[in-house]
Length: 222
Image 1 (cartoon, rainbow, N blue to C red):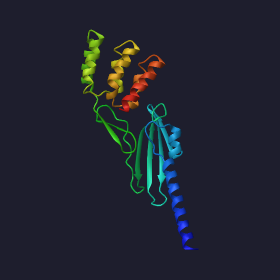
Image 2 (cartoon, rainbow, N blue to C red):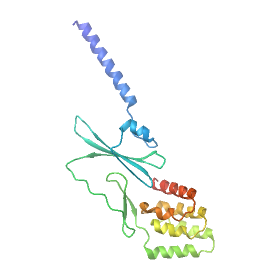
Image 3 (cartoon, helix red, strand yellow):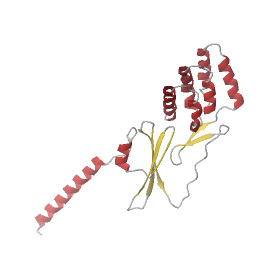
Image 4 (cartoon, one colour):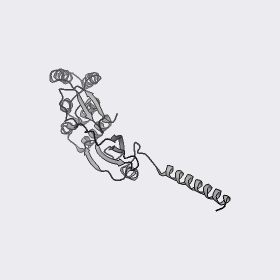
């Protein structure tokens, strides 16, 4: 093959490689907040494991690089509307035994919730029974509803609550709109979101329970 033919072949190969790399760059995507489940599947394929709770779905993917042998664990969290709200990627070492996840915490100790592999979020301590009773009685005995809400708002600046305590406080009020107002104040400070059934049981109508779910979900993703 003549020199000019070699040069033309090399130039064509380089051009084709550039086109392929450009096309690959355009089609390659990463998971981003707000994506749908179908978009995630288009990027990562079908999940290896799935689970769900009161806040939405959780998908796990395991990917291995055939050249390096590295394995990755990817956890994607979806809200109740099927949109991405959490993403976590970690490298997996098969020779290291992963610690068992903590059991559901009780209210008396420091609370840790796990959202994804080894990503703890500390929620602090909820009020002990004696302290909560003092707050509860002050709110209940306040003369006007506005005073009750003012007391609760001030207390919630530095206090954490259990779902049972939140439900009890909500029951001070008769109507659903005021019960939901209590929940809006207390939800960002709830330490045991796995027990939200206590809160739903306070509410009468499905529409109120649906709104409560949105309040709790939005508070959890702040």
